[in-house]
Length: 328
Image: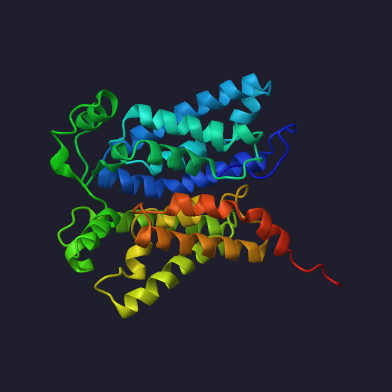
């Protein structure tokens, strides 16, 4: 998520910084759940990403002759970095975190003029770049919290992964994809999968934070509801006909980045749709694309690709879903 629309030549509105801080507060339950399940590497990723994003933002603002303090203080770079970091596995090497966070600011935000001008979600731009460029490094998901020293050793020195490999493994989406490719049933693919319940609690924690933002009306309920409805509806039909080959809607809602994407990524007020009907179509499109990519695409989770693809449709959606003016 980035800041609300405003001109880069005007002072940052206090409401922008306030909104970004409230979104960060809403992320805290999900971050805590991830730390409990996956260890201190989650926090390490967040701190590294935030430092890289702020440094990159400051350098680019200086080069563009913009006031650094004013625009750094809007918290949009911090939120972008945190969302990017939460998409990374806890054993991601530090250089990958730095690279992706910096590219999120450069390619996703400043390249288009900075605050409020970006057509794509900056965090997902950075994540897709590193996902395509370094797919192997994004597979080291720990299945239980490991010693902080071992985690930091793996992140910073690039060693020690072999010694803790017994504690790493596939995510539920990875396991399901691999199992189905081997002609296993859904139940067989997920049997004895370590850490499966952890993803349930993580998604519930992000759901709680997202509902709090909806209650405060900081985000519109239309996009997250449409995302989850689109994902659940498309998952329901195949599951009803062949539950052995297709996972249930509940599985898709409680694994991967379902709740994080629905409430915190798709609701970006800059790159997302702005009209009431447009938000529903935008969210539903994301949900449908997530299921299609998860089921038939080349990646286990398709949230980042789905968001970026639907970002392309926003100008068309906003142009053709304008509410009728009263009296006309």
